[in-house]
Image: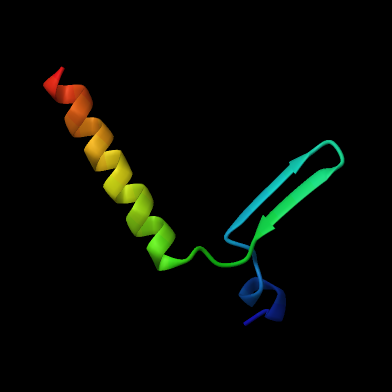
Amino acid sequence: MNAKADTRPAFELRVGGMHLTVQRVPGWLVALFTTASGAAGTWWGQR
């Protein structure tokens, strides 16, 4: 396997001179986002 493929970032954003790279997304951040999305969706559906 190519060594470069193993080090690909999970998320990369380039805007003008700014370059943001996230190598690995933590599990707690995914869980937080999922929980917040579910709560917002439930709140929106109950309106």
